[in-house]
Every structure is written in C-alpha cells, then in structure tokens.
Length: 420
Image 1 (cartoon, one colour):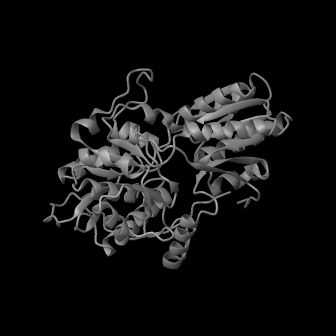
Image 2 (cartoon, helix red, strand yellow):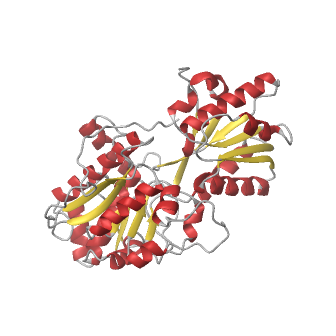
C-alpha cells in the first residue's frame, strides 16, 4: 500500500490577504491553489512545497519569458467556496493562469459553480472560465464528467479520468473470480461517477451488482443502515467502497460488526486512490482489512528513470520522497512550457499551446527528470523545434478536450495493520 508522506513548510500566502496590495513585482504570475487549512491541510503543505520547488528550479534557469516565475499560493480550504474566493483574488491581480484545484468537487462546484442538486442530465457548461479566459490546470480532479464540460478549451487536468481507473479495477475484481458485488460510495462528483463506470464495466464482464448504495458526502458515521442495504438483495462475494478517511473507517467498523453479528462470510474488499490512506487500516476494523482489502491508484511508470531521478532529488533536498507531488510538479511545467512556447502570458494563446507541446516532436524533460533541463527546453522552443514534454509522471499527452491520453495504475494491498 502506498502512503502519502507529508512534508511541512512554513510560507507566506501571497495575494490572499485582506491587506492592501503592495506594488506588483515584474514577474510571470501563476495562481496556485492549495488546501492549507481544513481536513486536507497536511496535503496542502505538500502542494505548496511543490509549487516552491518547481518555481525555484525554473528561476534558477532563467525564469519564463525572461522574467522570474512567481506562483501566488491561495488557500482554498478544500472547499468550492474557497476556490471561488481564490479565483476572484487571482482575477483582481490580473492572474488568468491557475494550477489546481485537486478534487473534482472543487473544480466542478468551485470553478464551474455547478450545484450538486441540479439535474445531472442538463447541458454542462463552465461559462466562468470561458468568459473570463481563466486557464485552469487541475491536478487530481478525476471525475469522468469533467471530460464533457463545455469550457471553451480552458480546463485541463494532468491526472487521468477515473473512467480508466474504474475499468482497471473492474477487470481486477473479475479476475479474482468475484461474481456478486455490492458497491457503496460517497454521493459526490467523484464517488458517483467512479461507481457508475465501475458497475457498468463489471456487468459487461459478467459480474452481478447486488446493491449500489450512495451516502451523503458529509456523512462520517452511523452507517448501520447503509451496510444493511449492501446485503438486502443477497450476500456479496466482494464489496467496493468509495470513501475517504474518517467515513471509511467508521463504515468498515459497521461492516465488521454486521458480519460478526449475522455470521456472514467475509467479503473481499476493494477500494481505489480515494481511500488509500494509512488510517483505513487501523482501529477495530483492522482485522477485516488486513490481507483482505486492495485497490487501484495512479502511479508513475514502474522503474521509470525520470521518476527515480525526481525521487532521489527529493530525498537529497528534503530527506523525504513524499515532500513534493509528482502531478502538481508536472502541471507547473506544462504551463511554463506552454507560456514560453506561446511567447506571451495571454491565457487564450497559452491554452492553445498545451496540446501542441505535449504531443509529437522532440522529447524534453524538466530539471528533476533524468537528463532534464529547463534552459534546454527554452533553447529548443526558441530554435523553432517541435517539442513533446515528458514529465516525472510519465508521458503527458493532452487531448483537445483537456484530458491526458493514458496513465499508469498499480494495485495496492493492505498487508499489515497498526491496530491503533
């Protein structure tokens, strides 16, 4: 099981203060969204560290368009309202190019301002970005619905759609000879869409979905009735859970109690990157998940020399290879390469370069990759060569709708539990 490691950084959040604005520096400014407060504050520190790390690399090799790169970090607290606040502050400073957010909910409900309660079948548009010409590069928003947003070509995401991951997991479940499956999921943009693709694919592969049980995304306890629903139409051989940390732990406790009280066979448990946290293996449900729960997650290509170079540099600098997020790092560089290639900061021209600089042409790499150099990338752009950015996360080939073409997934398993 892969565990995210958190590296803490004390920093000044520029541009998100209520104080009067100081005289702006003559820099190329990118907005950086990081959840520095709230339940994901530790992860937000990793994101902020990544922004600073990439900014330092780029500026040590001459900046962008001959000017220093400045990533203006804004704390959005992992909430749609926080994203809306940050976007307004970015716009007030003339910042039209943004890296983040890192969840589907904050992109869809924050950037595009959709209401979870609205008719999901209505035409989906994102006029805020197209009308204001805001270029958004999401880092971890994986919901399949994002692929079909009408955004004027201003929304990209460097992570793959969960349509890929759900199909990989469905094939893995069926390969385990699991025939009858129940599904329980957070009823939000991520959980609902992931589970929809998963159940459709399992059915196509010959599996049977006994129950699909949604629960409110703000629910974190009292899952007894939800567990009963998982068994109402029969006893499943396997159960898929789309949960986060606290809700996942409490749901597993209720499931364990139900199995013991009703003398049920223990079903095989499956998850994804949503609940790939160390907390999920602890507590009173530890004996349920130990050796019995596994899932899928996005991963850099195995034994990739570029990722290995990146990882070693992080250990040398921070003593921790989890101090910097590989997808956020590549997101900053794709934006920087596109700005340099466009020869301007104008967001509508920069967006048109993203597909071009990530497909075909001569491969170029960022400084932390094996043999990578930001200075060399700029020289190739200046010489007029067609380039193809390859990052530490692997090939980063964007399509016209803002998605990447492929990704690497691995299977994680819980082998040991802390029991605490």
